[in-house]
Image (tube, rainbow, N blue to C red; front, side, top):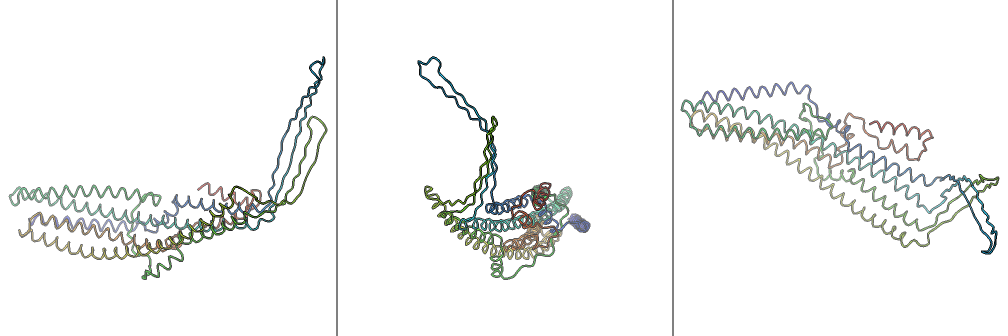
Length: 477
């Protein structure tokens, strides 16, 4: 027994020394959580998708502005007119027939300009602008989701790697115990039952290692999806983000700046502006119209030149109740957005409360597990020493070692949960963005594209050419 215990002590010491050495060498080249967050921000396809959706919303402003400008169209066509007339009665010997044909080409230009529509176009333009601001907040919410997912993937890789290392070391120790049990069985110090118990412990350890390796493989795939590359040597985060200790103040801050609430507020404004546009649609509009056309006979010398300029006043009389329905619909949508804003406020407050509760629970679990590991190690060492004196059985030693393994695994998981919970608090407060975290990465400017398109430039203008260069650059990403 003394030889077996001495062998176990040597194996445990060598294993610990090997882990310390590997950890020391790997720390110099290990990547940090900040590195993973930067790559997640750069490589996220979800962010790219929502940036494109924001650019599409920017174009709605350009289209609304365009309705307030002159609309000029051209027309061109060729018309072939033909006619055949037969005259005379049935008893006429030589009835007469007369045929005519004429081909005419026409070219025309029409123009119209909205002069006044009782503010309907202005309502729609302002609604498009508010939609852009709401979409920007949605993009910020997606950014938080991307970064929080990266934090979870990062810590899950660390967690599962440590599980694998722990399981491997445990398997080595149990294999040494099995060899020692076989040696002692050969000399008659233990029974076959002790050997079988050691064999069962080794088999369970091999199964646990296989499960841990499978969990690690899945965690690596999740990391690849969240960050955009495979994980290297990861360093456990040392400093956690600074958090407000008062939950109520955190809730108040979240209500002021969380993107879900700000987006809901913007959508309420959009709905109110759409109500104004729906009401104005019942009123007439005043348009300036003009037309210039040229008709010329291709089979003759005839031609005509014509043009007109006028002011047109147009308004609805009856459209089957459609306009009134649109007005009622706009009011219902406004009410729905108000309810959504209320629910968003409740949800954000609940998320902040839950996040702080999870953080407190994770910290308490980590503290408890630190004590559990200490106690389990003392118990294991004591049981092992007592087994040397014959006061404990092999099963007692195996059970004590399993308790130590479980407490170490719980501590590993608790350490990861604390980090994830801390960043979840930031996300719940609306402060988990690349700018808030001071990530060393070029951040996306949501206003850059808007500034180029908000005046609806045409391609031949200087601003339009600049916009073309930006679009080509976006297409190469």
